[in-house]
Image 1 (cartoon, rainbow, N blue to C red):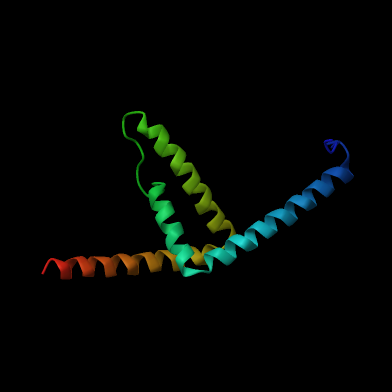
Image 2: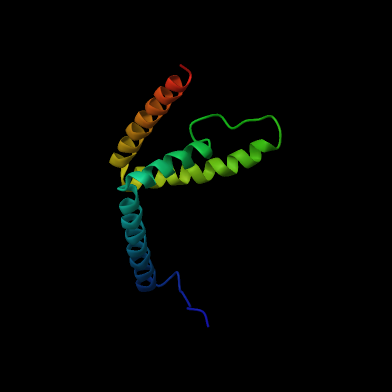
Amino acid sequence: MTDSFDAGDATQVGERREKLKFKERGDGEQFKALMEQKPFRAFVWRLLAEAQVFQPIMTGNSYTFMNEGKRQIGLWVLEQINRICPDLYVVMAKEATAREAGNKQERNLMNV
């Protein structure tokens, strides 16, 4: 049996709105708790890179459509970060820069 909903009933609309706010707040708190963990931030940075959020996606063939689908997921994750914990984006970017510098230094040492 489905729950009936009358969009013209202000009381029902208000109740639905409150339930949605409560759910979004819970989801946001969970996401922020994950973003506060360094390993998760490293994972999210790799996910954003894999989703090609920071680079052009045009290939000139049908791979563009696949790339755009991946990019949409990455943009959604980025929007969640910007909405829920924008300060942690800066932390994540700095950590990624430091990781890349460390990786570059390791590669240089291996080439010596």
